[in-house]
Image 1 (spheres, rainbow, N blue to C red):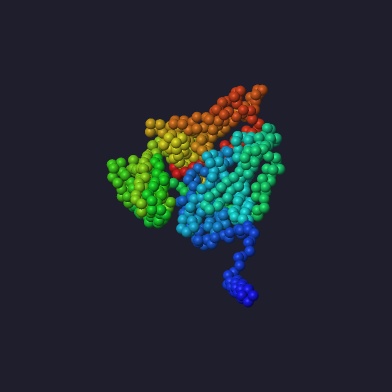
Image 2 (cartoon, helix red, strand yellow; image 1 turned 90 degrees about the vertical axis):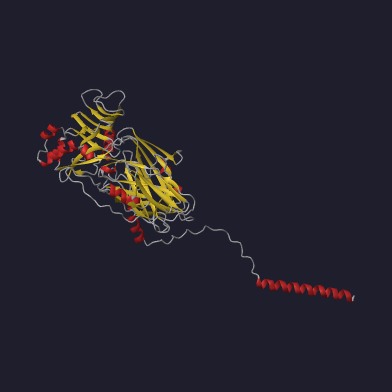
Length: 558
């Protein structure tokens, strides 16, 4: 009995000790935290800018050679500085509305994370696709409360002929340096008469929807997101005049000058240097300007190399010394600016050598072709020079010399050299300039070279005028009387103009009087193949074709 009491006491003592240990452990080891129900993470706050906004704007201005679009002398471009993704790093947008189809093209560059350069932001537009019409003062935006991403919505209006319109609601979002565009809904509209049209509506997958669904497409796509606006201040970009030699001017000798090459970023990889873009060959008029661009991966330095027609290898300074007047300037983004090109530069080639920790690589050579086209077109230019400097710019002198009688409408005339058909030989374009009447962009004369000799392919007169369009075609507007007028699109061939499409009026007191569209050229009288137009449709064609008329940058003749 006593033994049992001892055993029971021992067990009670052990239990007491275990409870004491457990209590001590509870005092030193925290209990697990209660499980929390996951909630939506707060939207990220904008990252602090790597540079003050004023410094970022200064960087964008210094980098104009990178983001400035090509072809400013042919198309109207605008730019705007903004912060689409609200990350504190500015972007510069360039945009242009082009052609009778009203297509908008946009490029975007963003200040890099280090704040030292601009990085282009690629988008997912494919071949033949365009941006919405973002050249507006304000755009509607939607903010995702979870990710913080900003998406903007804008309509895009395009035309396919005089009476066919496509209006799309498109969204675009800049996220981590990538731009994603998406079609939300589309309205297909065809005018059956001057005032009545047929409309069909589709969603982003081209499935039919109602008009109400089209009108509410963005509300449905971004339901639950915060709506706001962004202001954009667009500024038109101006083309810089390309230096051209005056007819009577003596060549100017310019001493070679080397500007400091831009600092080249250290490669992020020590792999082999790999060429990703070779410079392309260029055909250029004497005194003109162009750019050569090359790119490579894993490179830490870039050296431009030239080879003369005799096979002599030269650096920038040696190339300028061998071609008096030539100016070469290294720019950022692996670009070399070439200006004031002399005829002696014809037949030279250019290459870019990239060096890095993983070795070196040299691009394929790009050829440089130069010709003194001003001298070749000298007989034509001298007629206009004589007309203005001798006070005989009148129809009689124009008829005598075979030049445009539009010389009577301006106090000065100028010329431009532009390859209108891509055959490597620039055409001569002459138009009025200065303080006189430029006659609404009329091109006085267009000439081309055949076997080295100038051949006139267009010459404006009182009732038959020519206008140049941004796509290189030539619009001819003529009248054969009160009931006969025509607007003809022409393509430039090797030695003339070929009509490709036209709209014309035919009012001759016949049953088939009216307005017509010829898709295969031009004719005086309509045929069964021609499309009958209403007066409104006829005006649409004329307006669309005249929308893209321009006069290139001119060098004064006299």
